[in-house]
Image 1 (tube, one colour):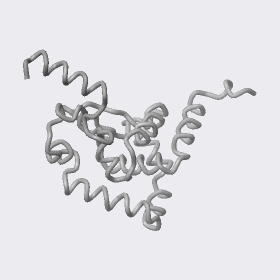
Image 2 (cartoon, rainbow, N blue to C red; image 1 turned 90 degrees about the vertical axis):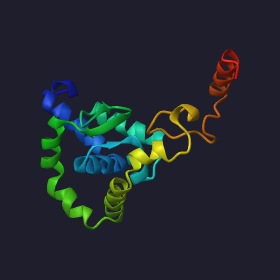
Image 3 (tube, rainbow, N blue to C red; image 1 turned 90 degrees about the horizontal axis):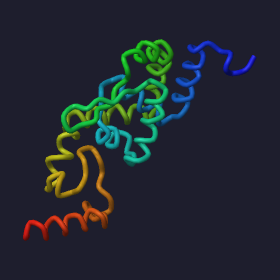
Image 4 (tube, helix red, strand yellow; image 1 turned 30 degrees about the horizontal axis):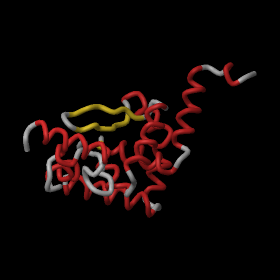
Length: 166
């Protein structure tokens, strides 16, 4: 019997378990089971670079566990409705029992609470001192070494300034 002989539900189960086999992705799922979060909030909570986090979120999306939705300027990630019941059944007691013992899980929950209290999503855009246009970045993304210092971005700004006589 080849791998193609399994019913679709078996294939789905394999994809889900593959996606959950990574500690980072499991941490993301546990956080998203608590509440929906944007990338900047996940970066804050997990202390992770945006590119690495996006890669993990892509794997979770492809497995059908996570969905992204746009809310105004923000791309929000959440557990998909169909996956929530399956995840509760699979992870339910195991994750809850281990979360109380794991230092990283306790740290994640503490940082999630801090993130909500400090309104990290909104503070990222407002308290930066410059508008998102000046930075050349989208809300929820992190600028490179120097905000807006990308050579193509600088050339575009210079051309725009020349056209408008600034």
